[in-house]
Image 1 (cartoon, rainbow, N blue to C red):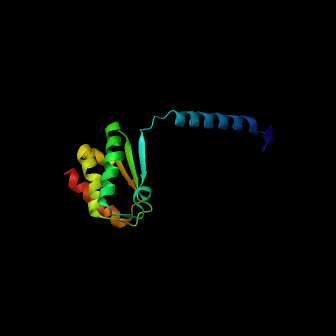
Image 2 (image 1 turned 120 degrees about the vertical axis):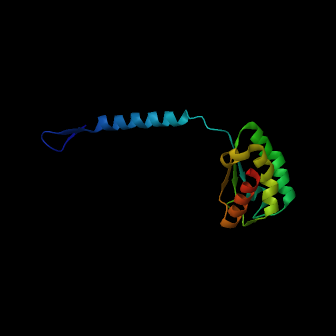
Length: 132
């Protein structure tokens, strides 16, 4: 179909739609070919509930999930979205050994999402303490 807006200019709608489809197909193909690093996602609510306070739970989670993921080279995503509180001892038990293993690389390999300001402050303190 050709639409004429001006006597001298025409617009070929089918050609432009075909170009758009081709570009979209190429973009999807490129996105599907991206090699993504393996990732371990841990929703802290599923393991600890709203209050991340029991140090033994942190140790078990660290030993069963986090350390093996680090050894495989996976990125660890800790989601604190539904956590109200997290104690310093819990976060130290959870993160100290992984940070010691990774060193400064831990800033990139351990990702913290959804943490409220208080929890984030404690996490930053733990990162700072164990990466120096």
